[in-house]
Image (cartoon, rainbow over all chains, first blue to last red; front, side, top):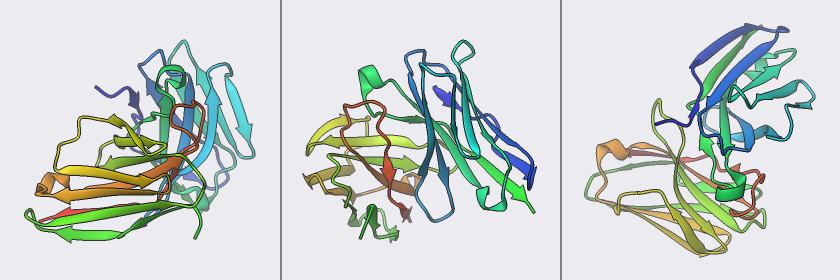
Length: 114
Length: 115
């Protein structure tokens, strides 16, 4: 049973608009969440993270929101750029009990059209 | 070389072959990981080594055999694989696998095809 789910396999957005990628989780012990971006023929690269003590973390054009009661997090990219086109993975960990063991979602392919 | 380097990038092997995947990290990290990414499935954790000791084996079949001679190098030895083992194998490293809130740095992966 998947503990981290990204229900949208793909998303298409116009350049300059907002991209919103969603992620749901089931394990209430998860307390640290990350987003990774993956280009073809490259490994995933870290984008942004959030601890469960926060509900928002911002880094430039990227903002991650965490709704613990709904067990939901989202990544907002504003404004979206063609170079943002990639597969985005959310990941979660129970850092107290399992350290760095990350559980990944299946990914969402973002396409930003010029 | 910087970051996490994986070789070979592509590997095609028969079911009776024996081959190995290699991973090297130049980040001074103490933990190394093998992940498997199959088509249309999430990344699956296979093995974790922390300070050269295996700390996690996620019910991986014995036809996959990891080796971690030191904190900078990680191998995945492959033998008598099945076609369903065809996947992208990703290596990652982090400061310490027991410490939460550490970011994993991934290599580019080794694309394995089993005929």
